[in-house]
Length: 307
Image 1 (tube, rainbow, N blue to C red):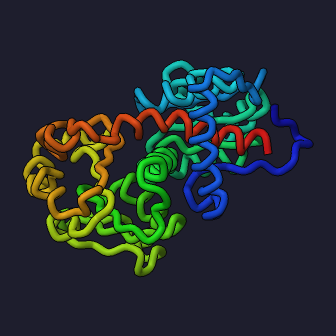
Image 2 (cartoon, helix red, strand yellow):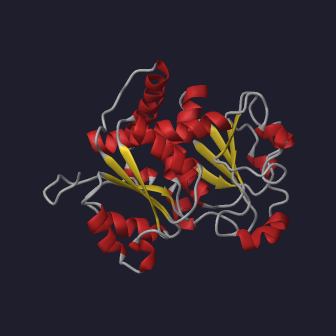
Image 3 (cartoon, rainbow, N blue to C red):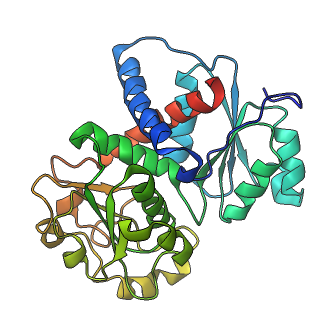
């Protein structure tokens, strides 16, 4: 548990918070932890440690993966929603951070504004993990990279195609292209491009190719997300029109490498951003990808709390 005299803590708000070497080590460790669990070995390095889980956005995979993950490592998780705490009643984020971080060993936050996570981390004595903001979703990228490494080896030098909105997942893929050294083609409708500062920082690793068929040419991995993210439900009808040509289907996958993988952070809307024929193919890796959220986050918790 953090105390005023504790050593400086590290936070994970973005993939850029870790070095490329640290990220590769973490991905490798995630697979090792997966194998440890499946072997039946008891491994509890986080015995008696507590993870505070702050949710301002609802979740299935994020809550289950973090809660089950820290339990497997011998720790305990506390679910904190804005409806049930002072966070939803006007207490300053800085004050919440100062109090909560004195009582738990790590804090995971899933919220809307990225600035909230940054402000909380700036006043926290415990490591803070960004479990999703409107800007970034770095934990999902840990799972995606783990999944690619397990199925195809190192992603360095490969080509990844993003199809859809220039959203938090797209931003994190841009950061991943920098950190894992792959090429990223981004197929998005005009007016839905990713944040320009994030894109420009990646240099020539990333390019926008508005047509999915062209962007998928020679790709080793194709990734997409829902057309309307959480908080954009009122835009659903208009987005169905805008994104109609931005579906990952058999025609798009036919342009990729023969052994190309398809990934989706889920939940998926079959018939919208992806066809059932793609996501339900026998060799689909989306289910491994979903499970790996738990293992990669276990590796992250171990790194932040045990190193």
